[in-house]
Length: 67
Image (cartoon, rainbow, N blue to C red; front, side, top):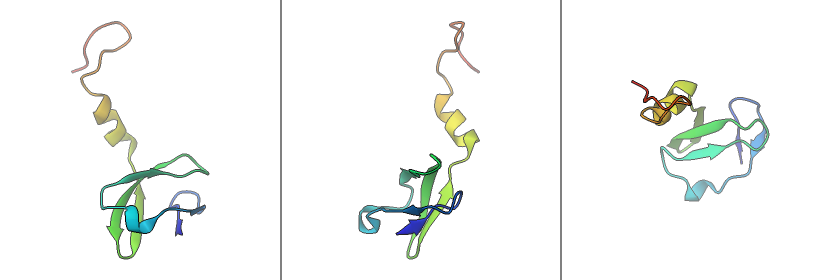
């Protein structure tokens, strides 16, 4: 068990199946969390800016490409 760094909920994850950089989602608050370290298991919330970068290059609602 590991604790969500955002809402302190207990997350039931298979720690031996995780690798550094993996993403998991907290069932309680819905925050996406990145695995920083494995021994001990350490999580950090994924910043919204990182999520926005994934959208870069997709078309906007008016059909224009973002820059």
